[in-house]
Image (spheres, rainbow, N blue to C red):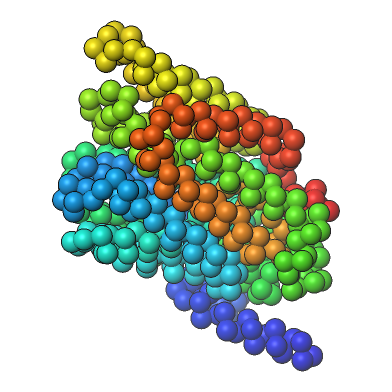
Length: 487
């Protein structure tokens, strides 16, 4: 054995404790080889769908964090005596924590694997929710929000990457969209429970998704593409066989992954200077562009402060209306999950961004016109209804494409050898812009609701041009075939 092989084996051994802790399917593999039978694994085979449903607990936590600030604003500001600016800081601190998590996410996921990084992400989320629940002043409140954000930053990168790497090519779009569907379910749950329980109890309930995620991770296999990249050949084939089923011939897929890994490993050390090459900078530009435009379109500003928006629109039961928006968002995202592998990514992105642009223009016009109408008039009531309908239409339009698909495309188009570095950059960009939007949304709405929605509409109009010019169609292609598009 060469010195290079020795050192590679040493590096792999360092990762094994993280990789194999609780990996039942690996134990099954060893037993079956000893018994010269695959019956042990075959009886315990697990489908891709089951794996996706387990890791989807992470995005549910993500969504619960996003939705928490909307139904609790009035209660928290009253109980702790916060100003609008202080609560805006609280709402946006999850994004600050997520930026730190995004910086670390790529390297953590590359070093200890996708499962290990999700385990790490769950711990600060649990501590963060408990800190908020017991907060007596802004210090614990802010610290808890930062810890939640850190975990969410890792989750937001790792879950779509894991799903993309385990899913068959004909199901990757639908399974990848489960990530955003779970986020919307988390938001809806926060809105629903916020109607009935105090904000401290709601924070305790936020612990549940990650509390269930940790044991669930012990029952799913690691990403076969990550295992192949790390040189765990036996584990890689075992993981892929478990995911595809033991009656499935995986020879072709194994060979494709091995060729892709061999090609990308010719130059193992990727530096920032390497990102100047088109095969790297173009997919990174597309990934960053979609994730940044997703946030600049204002969706998080609307979701974080939807109760405030509905109050300014004249809705008497703003929290109930907010929950209604959460339900609609879940339904629309479920439709996108069903359509994405049928209609393709580009078409849904175009429909979504056009729909968001039109909806936001309608909302902006309604708010502008209300300034010239008496609050007691019928026209004022009509304009209030129009603004509410416009906000709902904007959420539906976003959920059909700009909500789920940017994360899906990011996980698909980044080459495996730069996924850690480039994925961290793209995720960081998303969370930085999300922080800017959530930090300024409350204050912008107080300045001018019509002006705020006009700014969001201009961004969505630019998104239409961006998608039509630069976003490739990835429907029906393997991850290895997608990488060839950029060479």
